[in-house]
Image 1 (cartoon, rainbow, N blue to C red):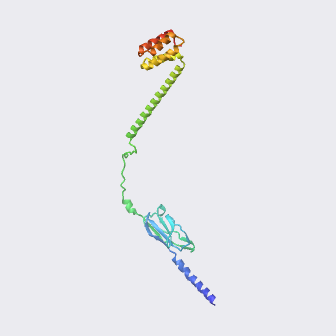
Image 2: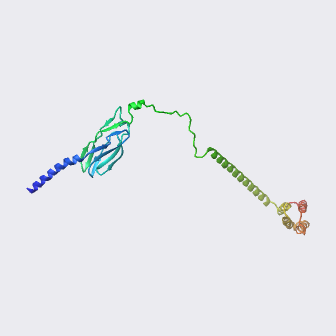
Image 3: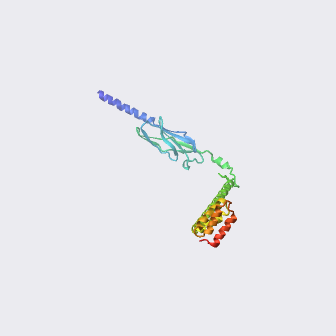
Length: 258
């Protein structure tokens, strides 16, 4: 008998708890009367462990669902033509939210009213102040065109100068190489005569060196000219350009560049 009495009490408690739990499930919209583009907070009270399946019809969901202390919260707004008001405010009936999990129930949303921010009369009476733009705005530059043009001119001049210097250096290098090749092809006497001719325009020390080289080359071939070159090279008096020129002429006439 005691067991039957306890079972009856439990059944009665469940019967009483069921309607109470269902009554605790609510869905609210804040605000329920909003303007086009306003943020609307949709909240459904549900115990922990409850999942919600909600559709908001023509409204756009901005965020959510987010678990709060009392239940689940979404942020929605009317942002499309599907929910815009017409001549007057528009009443929107949202699909009910379906709860599953700890509680299995369908909870309806209250009716939402969307009003326009401007009435049709105000829109018809207003004349938007459009201004006709007849002139192009002044252009803006990160770098002034005049400064950029000057910098490009300087750069172009520097490149041209670099090209000229490179070409001059290359021509000089080729000229030196041709002179070296031509000088290497000369006979010892011809090289000695070239040194002597160049020494005419230099100092006495260079003249003595050139005459000494000429004396060594002529030694064994033209003793008289070799002696004259050696004597002039080591004479107490500094050999003059005229003396060197005269001796070189004598060698070229009598011996020839062999």
